[in-house]
Image (cartoon, rainbow, N blue to C red):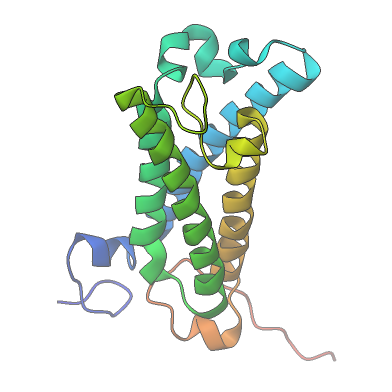
Length: 191
């Protein structure tokens, strides 16, 4: 059986990378943008409003502070993001694939950092002589700034990948198995 792109219809993951790729990418992008908004609000609270670090917890943290203090939430998002990047990678080709994998590997490290924090929170064995969970990057950069940087480092190549996926070079477009590419009208010759 073939899907509407003319390719053999496979399982769920295959469909996520072919006929459902646009919807899957937009869904992942929506999740990432909501997460980004939280970090922007948190940075605004700290840098502009001059709230103390423990009180700068983003929009959700204003209403559910207990939730923002759990490492489960942070690790869960990092894992969802990592899985999303991994599962949707096969829909990318050429230049967009390279940028998508850059985002994946940076997110892999970001996920690892959150796993370290999650582990410490669960075991109450704090690393680096701290009294709270501390990640490797926090040795040099405070947590608010560090995770703003990590999220930017993942988001930027992700957006570049999506750009090259929607507007692929010709050599990449012919290899695409989805319909995400913007359909350009052929240019007419000047009269």
